[in-house]
Image (cartoon, rainbow, N blue to C red; front, top):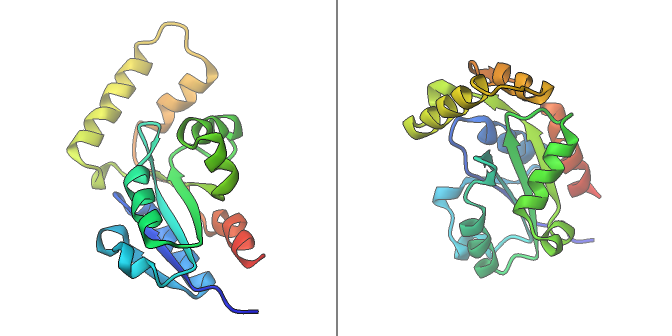
Length: 177
């Protein structure tokens, strides 16, 4: 059987997505590229593109634009992974995120994986830091806080890293099958 030619393409703002992309590329022994440096022509030489980006304000950061690029390249398979500060154990929230961002047909067609990562205020843009500050104030001032509100309030107080190489395993297993 012919070996599929793969590339991991990542869009990373604070380093978490890049870290996971590097781990995946190393495990799969495939090419790695920053999204800013790829073109449809370059990607047309690959059978599988693994695209990694962050969850940002409830959206898949840069996905629409990247999807158009991947479609123009004519690749056979797109695999998506998204990193975020939400723990992997928040399965209902993660599933709601996928439902909000991928239409049903895409959820069935495009293999997608979530990998918890963390927050890094030191590497965030000013806009992102301000958004987090506003979110923190909104939750702090909320009257009847749920357990999820309290957990969220604690989670966004400072930078942290909850990433782990073990979170790439479901994606790696999929790629190897």
